[in-house]
Length: 416
Image 1 (cartoon, rainbow, N blue to C red):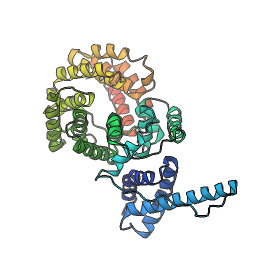
Image 2 (cartoon, helix red, strand yellow):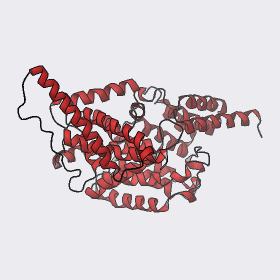
Image 3 (cartoon, helix red, strand yellow):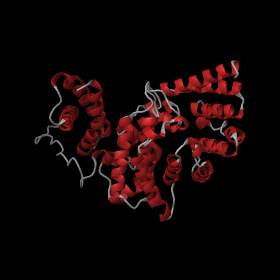
Image 4 (spheres, rainbow, N blue to C red):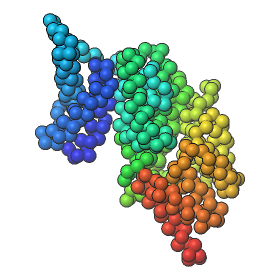
């Protein structure tokens, strides 16, 4: 088994094992430490000794042993400090079932991380760390905040759970219903990080996007009548359907307008469109359903020039009224440019210049460069492509933006 395969397996098993350990011992921070020791042991031993028959059970056993040792150490310390003899000894908490009513362990862990002691944003950040395995920098990128700010937020989240006295436990049905929107947002962010990695040498991390789809499908199976659950699953399927066409032979980024649409996964597109078609007429329409409808319009176009941009603009206008997310406004500006001309889009972008959430974000400069190019202002477009490239953390995105700047520079120096 290759090193990559071991790494992929460990990433897949980590949240499942963490969920089992937290349910058993009800201590998030200690369970995280125990899991890390188990993962290090696996990364060292498995390549040398071979994969165990049950890798998940192996990891759970090693992490549980670490937790048991820690508990015994803590008990011994308290015994010394209090000089109180414990005649009956300390009883290690009995293991709880590794699954509940057939539910997915990772899905259970997501629900557990949406702890009542936390704000929604802190719960999402903590869950992305525990379930998605995202780094603090990647989570900060998703929230459009500095890395140091996110590190403090995650640390405070753990402290808040400990100080609250409310244990990590399986939520009741009523609690799960209240936490559903937070769970969906977590899955949405995990998918986004997998589909377009915020940093590193690869454009995507398929293990993350694939896991997000799997978990969202599990939620949909539990709640088949929830429109936003169906909308999120449809959005993921319709977006992921383009995966094979997004990169070239060398891993280079290929934008939507230049993709070979014959490579798109028609089965995923059909499933996504069926979900959207079934859920939109049911009444209240949410943001995920609107985004899925936008993705469906893109996927239904046989060629880029066949895209129904007026419909996309109308959908983004509706979405913008639901959310003040600057990325929605950015995409709305692109749609406006495609319908009313690049200057209309540039004017909308100007309103985002004062939005602190986009300060230093490469996408604002990248979109402005594209619209300036369409408007014929190539010198300004080159400058913004270069600025965007300098700010991009993803190597394929950076290379694409630098290539765009070089292409324009060459065409300007040597006009046809």
